[in-house]
Length: 392
Image (cartoon, rainbow, N blue to C red; front, side):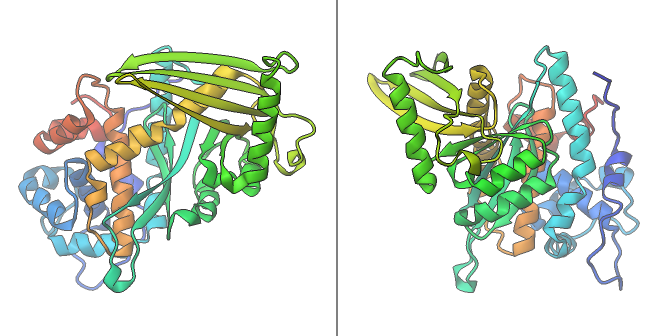
């Protein structure tokens, strides 16, 4: 694979050159690009709001004056508040596209160099609610976003906000249009298991592994019945494949069993699901403190039978929960955010996801993500390492 070129702070600034300034041009003292880059740096270093961004910028004045165009010094908190409130989240996120493309190429190159070449990257789509971002007095519900997480690369590639969890069905198609998914495997929980979404994924030259639950009750039951029937003969009459993994740690033992088989030709809904080629199930048996629990889930997929790839997709889907959502809550305290202005809270949610991606790309595997974030606040050199992907 070709060597990915290095980037520098000047390249970062260039990514935001085409971002339209939403402020009134009268008395604008601080370049929009500089304000945005400072906000991104400050969030990376631990800031969680406009006041914290301005405070960090004040302490890092000498560093920022050298790195960015700031003819009138560092901005105050009102400037950051104004910019992050006025910027349309869609336009703001689009400006990160070129940077994300570079990060994706760099991550895929790194994975290949480590001998873990990925045939088809797995992109997990899932929703998350920032629980304390509501404003009941003004009728504003908590922010709910749907995002794409490249589990094996540690990258958040896009997000779309929606009013509530039930609206994920309308948010997912919009999200799929934001991200280049060609050649990937898209995994989605049962909420997004919709015929139109499956067709869109196939139309964008990707594959899908979609979970089944009550929202597709008839299909769900058909898949259960077919697998149960084949199980009576230990799957001797179909081209089923099985894969089992065992793991032990953190006081528990987990056994995961995967079964995948071609979609039955007499499946009633077969023609309604574009690209559908296989069905399967995943069973998790967990033993902890002498107590055993079992959970079984069922799936439909556009993948041909290849159970290890099927298992990898299902397992990787949890990466968005463990690698992204857990980190946002525990490291960024996302659930505790009280930012209520609609645009600002969406823009902060994206800054959190994007900077988390930057932290996860840093090659030092000995340091935790939380320690890396602290280090960005302590060391200007380390901050530049994380931003540019270079060692200073």
